[in-house]
Length: 529
Ligand SMILES: Nc1ncnc2c1ncn2[C@@H]1O[C@H](COP(=O)(O)OP(=O)(O)O)[C@@H](O)[C@H]1O
Ligand SMILES: [Mg+2]
Image 1 (tube, protein in one colour):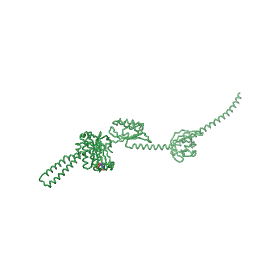
Image 2: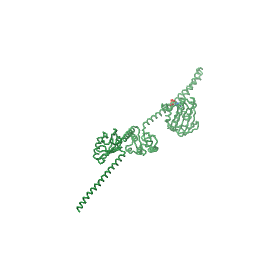
Image 3: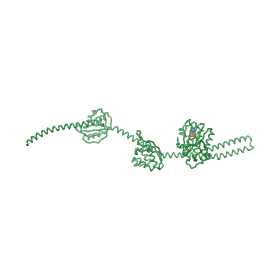
Image 4: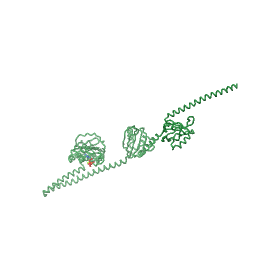
C-alpha cells in the first residue's frame, strides 16, 4: 500500500509536475500576452495623447510619442530616441535635473516642475514636466509628461506687463478712479480715489461698491440724492454720465463715468472723480472781479453822467442865458450880435450833446420809463443817428423786472446796436422783446456782414465779453449767432428778478406794443454758445 502509494505518489508527482509545468507554461505565456497587450494599450493611449510623453531608462530616451517629437521639433521620434535626456535640458536647469534623474532612477517620486527645454533646432521652450517611475518592457524606467507652456508664459508676461502699466497709469493720474462690474464688485481703484473720499482700506478691501457708497454717505450733504443718481446711472449701463458733486466739507468733485466694454459688450463702469475745488474757487474769484468791474464801471458812468447833467449842463445853460442877455444888450454892434448869436447856437448844440452823453452814461430813462420804453427810445435814437431803420417789437411786460436785469438787458442791447452800427454794414435791423414765465428774452438781429463767432470767442473782444459777463451776473444767458455774410443775432435772456429785491414799476410803466407776446421758449440757452 505504501509502495503503491509511493509509486502512485511518485507517478502522481511526476505527472503533476508535468501537468504543472504545462499549466504554468501556459500561464506564463498568457501573462506575457497580457503584458504585451497592456504595453500595446499603453502605446496606443500614449501615442494618441495630445501631450508630449517619453520614457527613459538610465537617463536615455527609450520611447517618445509624436507629440514629444513635435515638442522637440523632430519629424519622427526616431531622431532622438536613444539620446541622453540631458541633451535637451537648458544648461541653467541641468544641475537640478541631474538630481531629479538620480531620484527617479532610484524609483522615487519627484514633484512636477517647470523648466526649459532645448529643441533639436536649438529653440528654448518652457515646459511643465511631470516625471514618474514606471515599469516599462519588464524593467524600471521613467515616464515623463511634458506640457509646452511657452505661449502661456508669454501671455502671462504680456498680461503682467499690461497690468503693471494699468497700475502705473492709474496711480499717476490726478483723478480718483474706480471700476465696478455689473454685479457691484469693485474691479479696481486707485489710491487717489481712496484719498479723495477718505475711504479706509478695510472698506475697499471688501471690494463691494455698495459698501463704498455707504461709507461715502457721511461726506455728502444729501446721501439719498447721491445714491438715487448713482442708481439711475447704473440703470443705463451703456450711457456716459457727468455730474458735479459737492461735499459737506465744501469740496467739489466732477464725476464722470463711462461704460467699460469688451468686444462691444458692457462689462462694467469706470468712474472718475476730479477735485475741482481750487479751480472753482479761482473761477469764482475771477467772476467776482469781473462782476465788480462791471458794477464799478456802471457806477463811474452814473457819476460822470450825473456830473455832466447836473453840473456841466447847468453851467452851459447859464452861459446860454448870459449870451442871450449880452445879445439883447443894445450897446453891442451888429457884427458882435451876429457872432454872439452863433456862439449861442453852438452852446445849444453843446448842451444837447452833453445831455445825450450824460444820458448814455447814466440812463435815468431806464428808471423813469421802464425797460421796454427805454429800449424803444434807445432804438429810435440809434435809428435816427445812424440812419438805419430798426424794427422794434414788444408786448408790455407782464411782471416787474429787477433793476439788475433791466440794466443788464439795456446795456446788452446798447452794445449790440453799437456793433450793428459799427461793424454790420446792415441796411436794417430789428429788436424783439418776448416775455416768459421766468424772464425776458431780447433779440437784436441784423442782416449785415456777420462774423466768425468762434474766432471772436478766442480773441476775447470786450463788447461781447461784457455782454456775457453782465448776463452771467444776473444768471441770464446769451446766444450769439453769426457767420460771415449771414448777419448777426444776439439773443439775451434774463430772469425777472436777478438777485435783488428791487423791482421797478415796469409793469405799469410799459405800455409799448408791437406784436402780441407769444412766449413759451425755455431759457435754457447756455451762456457759452
Ligand atoms: N453785428 C455785427 N456785425 C458784424 N460784425 C460784428 C457784429 N457784432 C460784432 N461783430 C464783430 O465782432 C467783433 C467783436 O465785437 P465787440 O466785442 O463788440 O468788440 P468791438 O465792437 O469793440 O470791436 C467786432 O470787432 C466785429 O468784428
Ligand atoms: Mg462792440
